[in-house]
Amino acid sequence: MPDIKFRNVTIFGVGLIGASLALALKENSLADRIIGCGRSVGNLKRALEEGIIDDYDPDPTTAAAEADLAVLATPVGVFPAIAEKISNSLKEGAIVIDVGSVKGDLIRRIESLLPEKAFFVSTHPVAGSDRSGFDSASSDLLRGALCIITPTELTDGRVMRKIAMMWEALGMKVSLMSPEEHDRVMASVSHFPHLAAYALVNTIAGDEPEILLFAGSGFRDTTRVAKSSPDMWAEICMVNRKNLLSLLRDFQGELARMEECLREENRETLKFLLERAAKRRLAMEEE
Amino acid sequence: MPDIKFRNVTIFGVGLIGASLALALKENSLADRIIGCGRSVGNLKRALEEGIIDDYDPDPTTAAAEADLAVLATPVGVFPAIAEKISNSLKEGAIVIDVGSVKGDLIRRIESLLPEKAFFVSTHPVAGSDRSGFDSASSDLLRGALCIITPTELTDGRVMRKIAMMWEALGMKVSLMSPEEHDRVMASVSHFPHLAAYALVNTIAGDEPEILLFAGSGFRDTTRVAKSSPDMWAEICMVNRKNLLSLLRDFQGELARMEECLREENRETLKFLLERAAKRRLAMEEE
Image 1 (cartoon, chains in turn green, red):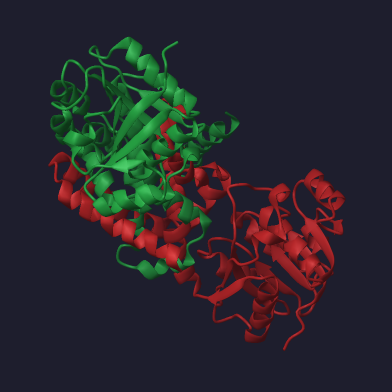
Image 2 (cartoon, each protein chain N blue to C red; image 1 turned 60 degrees about the vertical axis):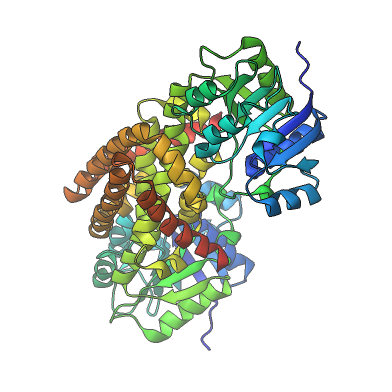
């Protein structure tokens, strides 16, 4: 069994996930020292004051120099730039992981940028919130949730097992998937539902925000994820655009079927469509 | 100030809303005796055993005979049939209300069926759940929620005020609206979000239910209302089909705009669309 403790951990991007990971590593005594790196020194200082990190360094190159584990936890679009900046300073045998919620061609780009002496494992702790920033961070966010590891043919098996055990030690259930399958699955269960929720809010309240005074818990739940960071989600959607375009077509087809039922006053077929959905959704409660 | 206590209340349809009203009337000592009426004697017997109603009578005609207040709380499609059955047995001055979540032409049909000696006030306590049946009923369901009263030119002002005060005494905030405005608003904040949630579940999991094993809280919240009764919602959608068809067109337009952004890799415009929605949705939290 590999040792899953790390002496020095550098976290790039001390936001919701980066800070939750830092807290969880500390709580489980899996890291001796955690260094935060990010663009906002003010954010890093606050994270230090709150005891989330032990030190900070706004320069990725020097921040990575001592890292036994380097964690890419910024918005996904920034990953390649960080990989480039740290490639010359990483130690022999350093492990780099990302926690990105979309993979696209990012994994191959990071792999091509990192030096041979370092190991890269791509992971996705499927733990989120409509909130961003470390103020909402908590080790509880990870506990009980799923973490998907997406190995490629370049991934070192021993290092991958070590990272899998680290996430498991933090209470996560680890699942393996190819990067392509990961993006297809996440488009379905996460990225597309976000897009649909944003579209629903614009449809209902875009031109008439005051109508939301009459909205109840149903509307609130259905659109909760539309409170999420537009910047982060525009980026995720762009990386996963092909899967999303395919789901958009399916969704438009489903809506067209419902439209036809309404137009033709075909209550039985509409009921059949709703029953199909209700059955699937209710089955989730029985897990 | 009119007296808002009732001697005999008959509730047609002892389901989630009917039973919640029964419990709330009892708790607030606004009804001396509550009679339940419905198609399933088994359901009525259970409601009696659980103390939700004081008596039951499966025959609408006799169940309405002593009612000072008769409440239509069945699925909305059944309202006219009940109105017809009770029209000859209602007492002089009896008040009939409905609690339907869609109005369409139902109010005018009920008004045309009830005798002149009775009063009719159409109401909609906007309190629901994805669950049906009296097992989930509670007076808490009504407390703090909105109740929309939809008067017509035939509605008696004094009786309407009495009914408004009754709902207020049960903790609801009363709002007045025309039946047409009610249906337009409810299509937006409730009926269409339900339809979108059902369509989303079918799109994501219709052919691949096992993908939901990877779904997290975002998907669960976004589709929670798709657990609701397909029978009830197919009926509501049919009654409110014109408003829903109009919203479907708007929604398809919004989705088409997002599709164009993805197709043309126009991240800035997509971000703008998501920001618009996030701003509207976040504003709801500040109320």
